[in-house]
Length: 137
Image 1 (cartoon, rainbow, N blue to C red):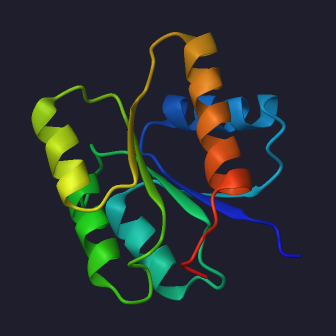
Image 2: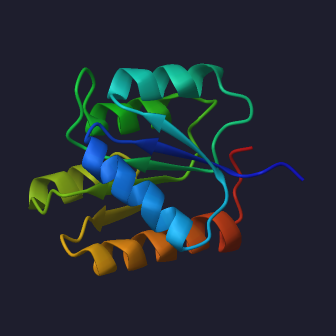
Image 3: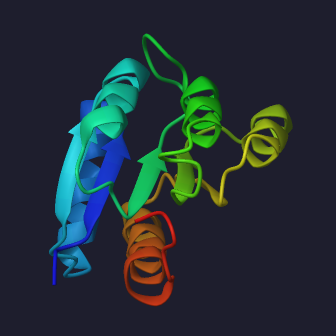
C-alpha cells in the first residue's frame, strides 16, 4: 500500500515548521510535500503521481493566491475531486465564503496557541488521511 501524501501549501516558514511539527507530534508519518507559493503548488499538482491525498492550503500566498489555486484545482479534471482544506490565519467572512464557494472541503483558522494548533492539525490529519475515503485517486 502506498503511503498517503500531504501537500502543504504555505509560504510562511514558521507556519510550515509548526504544521510539520504538529503532524509529527500526532504521529502522522505520511510524506509531506511543501509548496511555498501558489504557482509551485499548481505545478506540483499538474505532474505529481500519485496525487496527494489532501491539500492543506493557505490563502495568502505569493505568485498565485490560495483562492485562485483552489479554483484551478476544481477546474482541472485531474484534481477536481482532490480534498482541499484551507488552513489559514484569515478570519475574514469574505475568505470563508469564497473558500467554500470555490469548492473547499474544509476551512480551518490557524489557532495562535501552539497546543490548539497541534490539536487542530492532528484532528484534520486523522480525518483526511485515515477516515475519509478519497475518490480523487
